[in-house]
Length: 488
Ligand code: GLN
Image 1: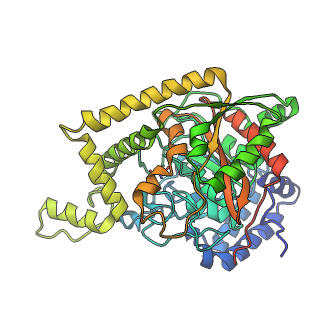
Image 2: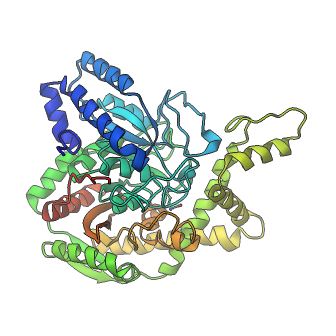
Image 3: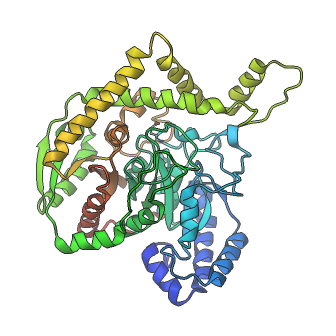
């Protein structure tokens, strides 16, 4: 089958559309035809806008005469925890099943002014809590490379939509790996930006000190393009960084041109803790990269505390953030006649939240409670600071830190949710970047028995350009770009 429009990179489409804007309509039809064919199997979306509505948007876009937007005419899939005015935003939860936001998140406003069109809202783990997209209150999303397996999570719908050819670009959110994990499991590119580089305004909160919105794409250049559009200071987000955002596409070209040599630290332990299948594929790709850069193995101490610290902090913040869903100001509405507040709250939360969310609220409240606070929450915060200092030291000697993105291959549906400890432990490589606020990327580096493997790189704050640079080099070496899974 021809993949005209389906697999074409955004940066090429934009060029084509500028010289003939009517082509955007053909592109929209191609993507919608593809969705009709594969979506019943993949289930990447929770809400898909109607074809007609999108064609109307295209007409308006063309009429506006603004062809210069960097994403002119591009269809973007948006994770369902990012607020979209007039489009239902559920967080994959019964609690918000009928919630239609009255405003756009800052990233959505930026997408629109860049000429992009929101195509639909993608499936995810409920409130972004999970690693497989199976805790969605509606249905799981399937991995387009192997429908018996998960696409990763929590932004599993966004990654699956891309690799199934159901969108050209996608947005996800990453609190502990939720962009990079599904990128690794689907052979797409995903980047978690430096904390504060992309506005969180309009992102439904999970753990606010770690949440970041970021781009997913099928090639590095598209990733850089989307990042340039969504990044930037926003007065509506108190943690937004007041920095001037560079044009990452231009920076990328400059790096590639200079062929700059980087110093890359390889975290031995994170490789050794990974499955042999992952080690072999990721190791081989890294060897090639190390033939042009300077690589050295490093030891990371106290790795066994990383996952615990992350989950304590994430759950503590979640328990406080999710307290707002009381069925009165926020959340599910239930009949309240003649009943006490306690009854109403209980009813709303019993019906509105799924098991994983309830568990995390309970554990989060526990680690914050008097008597346990010092033992868990405060200790986790101390560890977080120590981890940050350890990485500050590492970044004095190295530009990047490499590890597999996920220590396992994409599991079968049901496999990880049945073993929560295994599921949490699989986050060890990704949560580091969230705990200490640094940027990290996942790059597809190969397949093992038909299943994708991703390599992760972490960089110091605001060094996204270096991440994009190695990503581009790996992409050029391995040619794992613009991949579309057949879905059968
Ligand atoms: N799997 C991790 C968690 O469940 C990460 C989720 C995320 O990044 N949103 O918390």
